[in-house]
Image (cartoon, one colour):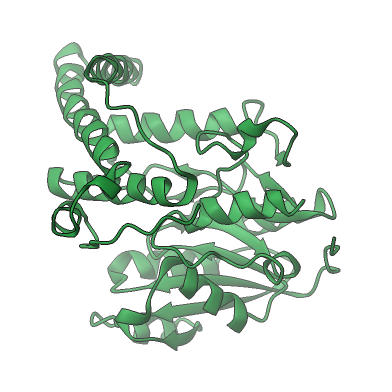
Length: 329
C-alpha cells in the first residue's frame, strides 16, 4: 500500500461550476478567508456558464479550466480537476457549498494526519438560513449519527459485509465537502458514473485497504429547498444512482412507506416545537414535511427500479433529464 506523502505547502480547493450565480461568489469569498498554514490554490472547472461565473472566479484569483457542457460528468470532471490540481490534497466543494468558518479547510486537511492510510476526509453540511425544518432536522441527525461524540471518526473495511451497504456510515463520503489524497486517487480514481460517484469512490478505496475520516468540525453550509417537481427528480436521480453503483433497491411497501412518512413528519413537528414554534406554525411545518417525505419515498422507490422503466419514462422523471440506466456492479 502506498503511504501518505509528506505535507506540502500547497492545498487545492476544487469546484465544478455551471452558472454558479451569487452563491459562487459567497463560496469563493469563504475559501479566500480560510486560515491555514499552507498556500491555497483555487481551481474551477466550468462547463459552459453563461452568467459570468468564469469571469467572477478569475477576478477572485481562481484558475479556471473550461470544458463544453456535454463533456461534464460527476466523476470524470473531478478526475480532470485532480489531474490539474497542484496540491497533494484536493478539497472538493460544489458551487453552492460554503465553508462555514475560517478553519474549515484546516480541519478538513487535519484528517489526513490521523493515519498514514487516510485517503479521504469529509465534513458535515449545515442548513442554509431559512431552510425548511425537515431539511435542517435530517442534516443534523444524519451528520450527528456519523460522530455522536463530536470527534473525528476513522472508517476502514471490516470482515463484516455491512460496511459495503449503502446505508453504512463507512460508505458515506461527499465531494460537496470532501478532500482526496493524491497518492490514493492515483490508485483509485473517481468512477466515471452519472451519480453517486463519491459514495462509490469511498467503497472502492475501502476495498483497496485505505481508510476514510469524518471530521465533524469541517462544516459547510449546504442545503436545498426544492419545489415538488425538482424534489422528485432529484431523488429519482439519486436513488437510480445508488441502484447503479451499489445495487440498492428501496422498499416499495405501501405500509412501510406510510409508517415512515408518519414517523418522520412527527419528528419534524416535534423539532419545530422544540425550536420555539407554536402549535399552529408546527402544524404548517408538518404539512410541508409530509409532502416532502411522501415525494421522496415515491421517487426513491421508482429511482431504485429505474431498470424496469423505459428510457422515455426515465428521462421524464429525471431532474437531469437522463434516460439511461448504467449499472456498475
